[in-house]
Image 1 (tube, rainbow, N blue to C red):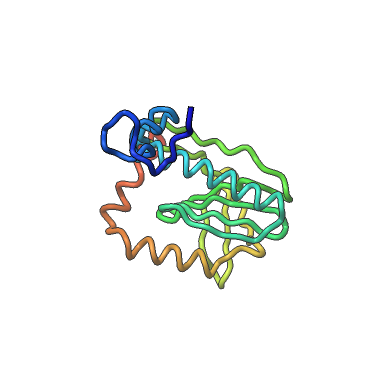
Image 2 (image 1 turned 90 degrees about the horizontal axis):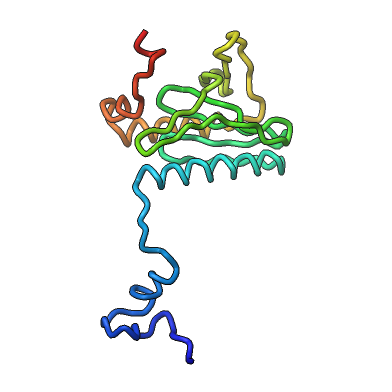
Length: 172
């Protein structure tokens, strides 16, 4: 039996190219991801990527929606949410850390451990638990500042408010 090329007409006589017809059925690609599922996959993938960058002690930063990720040459990596200035460390000294991300079809909940602010061209993080302030040396403060400005230009305040859902601790 001869192999069918992806760009040849499908043997089922639909008139479509094979890659847009029966090849999809064979590979199971008919299942489309919902935007929430796509964000879930992208967020988890981005966390894993920045953890790998931290493990490799590579200084990189990236953005995904309202999230900012960065790693340093010291092996630290952080996930930051730019609308409420929440953050969580995802790698320390070249070792990936466990990150509590709870996702369902409608929401993504992250157990944020810190808040952050930009001060004197540095990134300062404050722990929620005991309010200890730490300056992140080697953090990309300039890139983070630019990313926050882009987010605020891109979305209205009303849209940014919709990013967050009030939880039990917010309602109290």
